[in-house]
Image 1 (cartoon, rainbow, N blue to C red):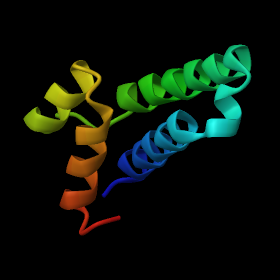
Image 2 (image 1 turned 135 degrees about the vertical axis):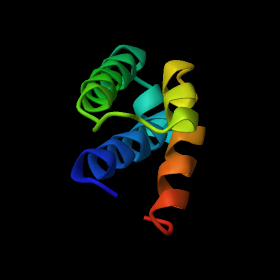
Image 3 (image 1 turned 120 degrees about the vertical axis):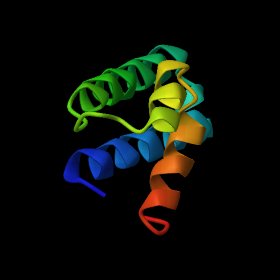
Image 4 (image 1 turned 180 degrees about the vertical axis):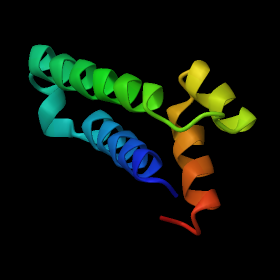
Amino acid sequence: MTKAESELAEALRERLKIISDEESRRNPEQHLKRLRDVSERIETLVAALPRPIPQRLAHFLERRSYDKALEFLCSCSGGL
Protein backbone atom coordinates (compact mmCIF):
# COMPACT_ATOMS: atom_id res chain seq x y z
CA MET A 1 0.00 0.00 0.00
CA THR A 2 1.34 3.42 -0.91
CA LYS A 3 1.63 6.23 1.61
CA ALA A 4 -1.31 8.00 -0.07
CA GLU A 5 -3.44 4.86 0.23
CA SER A 6 -2.47 4.43 3.90
CA GLU A 7 -3.41 8.02 4.65
CA LEU A 8 -6.72 7.57 2.83
CA ALA A 9 -7.45 4.40 4.81
CA GLU A 10 -6.74 6.26 8.04
CA ALA A 11 -9.06 9.12 7.04
CA LEU A 12 -11.79 6.60 6.18
CA ARG A 13 -11.35 5.00 9.61
CA GLU A 14 -11.56 8.43 11.24
CA ARG A 15 -14.83 9.05 9.39
CA LEU A 16 -16.26 5.83 10.81
CA LYS A 17 -15.20 6.87 14.33
CA ILE A 18 -16.91 10.23 13.95
CA ILE A 19 -20.11 8.66 12.63
CA SER A 20 -20.29 6.24 15.56
CA ASP A 21 -19.34 8.83 18.21
CA GLU A 22 -22.48 9.17 20.35
CA GLU A 23 -20.97 12.01 22.37
CA SER A 24 -20.20 13.99 19.23
CA ARG A 25 -23.77 13.66 17.97
CA ARG A 26 -25.04 15.47 21.05
CA ASN A 27 -23.63 18.64 19.51
CA PRO A 28 -24.99 18.43 15.93
CA GLU A 29 -23.19 21.55 14.72
CA GLN A 30 -19.78 20.33 15.88
CA HIS A 31 -20.53 16.79 14.68
CA LEU A 32 -21.31 18.04 11.17
CA LYS A 33 -18.16 20.17 11.17
CA ARG A 34 -16.07 17.13 12.06
CA LEU A 35 -17.73 15.16 9.27
CA ARG A 36 -17.17 17.99 6.78
CA ASP A 37 -13.52 18.28 7.79
CA VAL A 38 -12.82 14.56 7.39
CA SER A 39 -14.75 14.51 4.10
CA GLU A 40 -12.58 17.33 2.76
CA ARG A 41 -9.49 15.45 3.88
CA ILE A 42 -10.73 12.31 2.12
CA GLU A 43 -11.32 14.27 -1.11
CA THR A 44 -7.81 15.75 -0.93
CA LEU A 45 -6.28 12.33 -0.33
CA VAL A 46 -8.27 10.78 -3.19
CA ALA A 47 -6.90 13.47 -5.52
CA ALA A 48 -3.36 12.57 -4.39
CA LEU A 49 -3.69 8.84 -5.11
CA PRO A 50 -1.25 7.45 -7.67
CA ARG A 51 -2.84 6.98 -11.06
CA PRO A 52 -4.35 4.86 -12.37
CA ILE A 53 -6.60 4.12 -9.42
CA PRO A 54 -7.85 0.51 -9.43
CA GLN A 55 -11.24 0.46 -11.13
CA ARG A 56 -13.16 -0.97 -8.16
CA LEU A 57 -11.61 1.52 -5.75
CA ALA A 58 -12.38 4.40 -8.12
CA HIS A 59 -15.99 3.17 -8.32
CA PHE A 60 -16.35 3.09 -4.53
CA LEU A 61 -14.78 6.53 -4.12
CA GLU A 62 -16.88 8.13 -6.87
CA ARG A 63 -20.06 6.81 -5.26
CA ARG A 64 -18.88 7.78 -1.76
CA SER A 65 -19.08 4.13 -0.71
CA TYR A 66 -16.36 4.78 1.82
CA ASP A 67 -16.90 1.61 3.85
CA LYS A 68 -16.35 -0.46 0.71
CA ALA A 69 -13.35 1.67 -0.27
CA LEU A 70 -11.77 1.03 3.12
CA GLU A 71 -12.50 -2.68 2.82
CA PHE A 72 -10.88 -2.71 -0.63
CA LEU A 73 -7.78 -0.90 0.60
CA CYS A 74 -7.39 -3.22 3.57
CA SER A 75 -7.89 -6.37 1.51
CA CYS A 76 -5.22 -5.27 -0.95
CA SER A 77 -2.71 -4.62 1.81
CA GLY A 78 -3.23 -7.74 3.83
CA GLY A 79 -5.60 -6.18 6.36
CA LEU A 80 -3.89 -2.90 7.17
